[in-house]
Image (cartoon, rainbow, N blue to C red; front, side):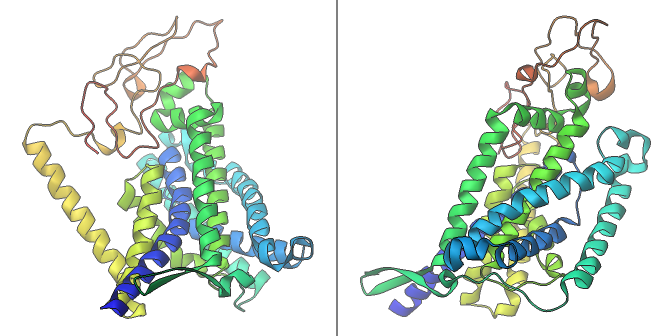
Length: 389
């Protein structure tokens, strides 16, 4: 009994630690989808580039000599994040912007078909280009902390060992998540990102450059996923095709937490990490991913049944787009409340809002933007309706 309990606690601690990194990995994809509504199949390959960027920062660019083998890898990982963010910004500017943002109105299927083909093409280019540049030999960012552990206990003859590298990985993941939350909720650029996610048309009328907001969101999502990839590389070897293994995990975490919810994506990744590690108590290691998708399907089926029950009871349920494409500048529309500045009135038009701006007036006050929660899981936009999630 004691041995079984110790194994359970060991798997639980490992699941929480690796789940924190998975959560950060899912947040990058959730941010891109939440703001841009783009399904990015190349996200795993951007993570792969983040792994190699951290690897070469550590081994070839002097980080190892300057900071040592213990903490040098984590410095290299933090340096890789901004590099991949800049790369993501350039990729969006050159490619993704042509099939997203304000240009989707002229494309078939609101640009989703073109987005799928383009991101799949980028993924193939990165995978095969990585194979040519980096080779097929497995690489890893090893630190002495990866092979050492803290002992918690003993408590009642039970000890739990926490891998030091995974512990620091979890701390970095939580710290990055906190900084991102503050950026989204407290900064001017964060308000612009939320406005662009909420209703791009109304945000444009408010003087917000939606395409620039999308570029910033894509860069942030790419950089965050690169940091998560570097953290994974301290415990697992990687190769140019490693992104294929993790992109499915990313999408499962984003859907589990709620499409468009950043915090939800983080907890979705945490859930996947827990399920993956806890499943090893009863299943072979090869079936870890199978356990993830069993939980994923069970969650979706139960959520759909619960939503139908609430709908049958006469309770209003928001459509998936209502929280991301609700009222940005606050007019009283059919479902949403706006507060419009002088010279702007509400009416019918694109996106359910028609704004009339005086010729000499240019509005750049993003503090008027009050989108409903990008960081919350499907919160209803109308304040008179109760929260359902």
